[in-house]
Amino acid sequence: MTITVTAPADLAGVVGRSATGPWSTVDQRRIDLFADATDDHQWIHVDPERAAAGPFGGTVAHGFLTLALVPALTEGLLDVGGTSAVVNYGLDKVRFLQPVRAGSRVRATTTVRSAEPSPQGWRVAADVTVEVEGADRPALVAATIALYVPAPDGA
Image (cartoon, rainbow, N blue to C red; front, top):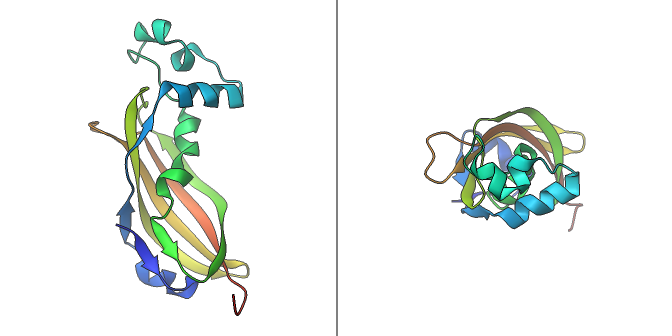
């Protein structure tokens, strides 16, 4: 379910609401591409044969890959009309609670924690949880901040 408001000024009215996105598969190809992009080729990520005998029983996604998926996993969960852009403003906290094994499906739930006006627009703090299908604990929890920039008048 999507949280929808018609204008940034309406964001204060959705504090405390949550939305959950669809499942997305984290396959070995995605892990390998992330390893290439970051030059992090540790065997637990890219060597399926060696990783099978390792601590996780197979290859696992980089924690930072899971974090990097947050924008895609939360896309569209908060739909704010009357904006020209949404900018990643930062993170207050990130915790990696369990690994994401290659081939796992993940999804995110976002909960709006606060919405405050700023000179540039509206700053929205949200608690994001990335869960792994069938797992008891989430893979990641993060406190995110996004800036919703209002559309120019008449746009």
